[in-house]
Length: 191
Length: 191
DNA sequence: CGGTCTCTTGACGGAGTTCAAAGCTAGTGG
DNA sequence: CCACTAGCTTTGAACTCCGTCAAGAGACCG
Image 1 (cartoon, helix red, strand yellow):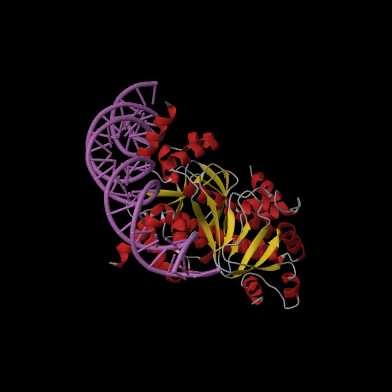
Image 2: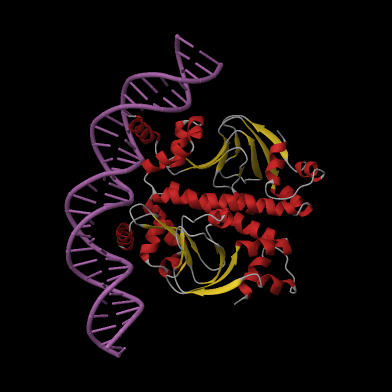
């Protein structure tokens, strides 16, 4: 269980068996229930979260009161509002558990201490952010290039198990469409 | 001129006056003309580019043959297709100069050597990617939350000088609208 | 079982696209 | 330095994707 973070770190940087427990000590392991909020819009995003088990999502509420999901965080992903986390400013987003989840959390100060004491962790976080940045680039490509219908087909054929796992209204809010229209698309695809 | 990169690095990590020239030696300084391509769709994105002067853009061509601009790279920004750069796989994007530009370029191998020799550069690149990742999150928020009209108003009041600087069809391709509709919006706003 | 949350269905409306054509601007060569 | 041309911008009409609203049908949980 608690090995998943260490395993992930070791994909990108060196960490001896002696160092591993010392690194782990910087993190808080927390468990959240379905629909529990990790921080709300307007609060500062103090923690950077690594998902060990379960699924988180980051969303905001638009002017009409509709929730829009910007990002999901599945197992082995980091999630935070990095603008708020870095600059200690109120977040424009809310982070919430989609289902019961187990996380490692680290606050900004503690992360800085970790990086000072274990400089090889800079490389790890560089790779995490670089990968996330690359994922955002691809995400933007899909959002721009495809119609909402094509987006849905593309997404549900790429991640069929994930589409099964989450409720449809969340998928709709991630694809940027209404639940009604998603329902119409599903009906069209089955026939 | 050649000081801008060093100045930028020093915002995020330590670099002595002795080290600075050694670090600079890892980069190639290049100049590109307006509309010159740095790499095309389908080629591997071998270089990571730092813009000293000018402006680059990263775009792709959708199924209908329309160019969609995913990102601009202005002065003091890094730009690359990081998926292609990291994994040495064909890029889904094309990087092009919007205007005459001066760049520092570093290829993957050389960047790895630089990181090995100057480990503090891991911190620098971590910060660059973290900032870019945060910017993508905000970008997604705007794309989801606002109508295209609101997006245009928001963007042109936030970056009026940039809107003047680039041709309108590029702005349209960045906002995800047609040049025709952008033209309509402009007419509406002036009156 | 009862109530709340989720998904479906259908009619209507509007933001934004498509197509076509004319006006404008800037770069290029003479 | 001017003229010409290619590319950029504007305008307008028809169309379409997708949102909105409303109402009903399931599904899940106490």
